[in-house]
Image 1: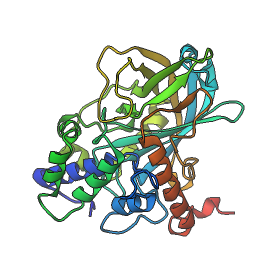
Image 2: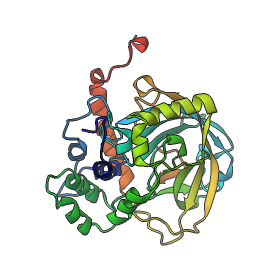
Image 3: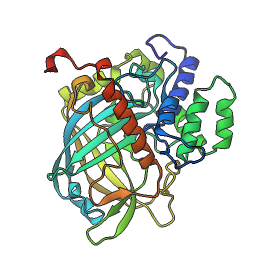
Length: 351
């Protein structure tokens, strides 16, 4: 499944839609134990639903299994201090490391068959405090609740041809994401993608004031549209090759971090609903990617991009997804750590 080869446009379209559904879990969203009692949805059940028919990707993340590491800096311009007392918003340069990735549980997936792209990011303050975030390229999430995401995974993996239709009828919010997946332009570079938190968080400023926010990283590189067919011709692993060559030849790649501040009444617990246009935005700094590293030996390999690892001045909101993601990420991390022999580092870096 998802091996290189020539695909018809209709066949590729079907694969893309399925991949978009799975990749929409850009972050393996699921409820944690007890929240859905008596229909308890545990991290184990979510990971089971994420596992492809070919089997678990041993040694790899259970979703967004295909990726490549980067290191760089976050250049804060100081504007963020009006919203949050988090140290990483004070003007200065802060170490950053991250991971470009595809929304799939298959580490060998063909790039052109995966609609959702993602970025995991860790920014460190001088005192060791960390801000971890996992973002994806769509502007909205496919569903409104973690339970619905689990049902989406089950429907997309069902052999019943009516399963997805039934799911869409029961979850009308899915239509917005499906429309994006079918019509949004593709690019041939991680550097040309925006990455969105989608989940809502709360920033607390130095005076104790709270601000409900979402954030995005907007690329400095000009996005260039490419067809699915042309992307397929560039090879199954083109995105990793392209970003490595781009940084080596064109230099550091940049994204502007933009914080969007909610108005009273904006939905903060439902990432399938975009906030209305015209909301206040604040540019708080620039992510600069300086170096690309293969994941096998890269600095991001053993990082769990848990979105609940937050510095003082940022906390979760009433959005249930970050805590749910945290529980699944933790289980995924434990599994891949125990399976390290199945994804060994190269001889060059072994002790």
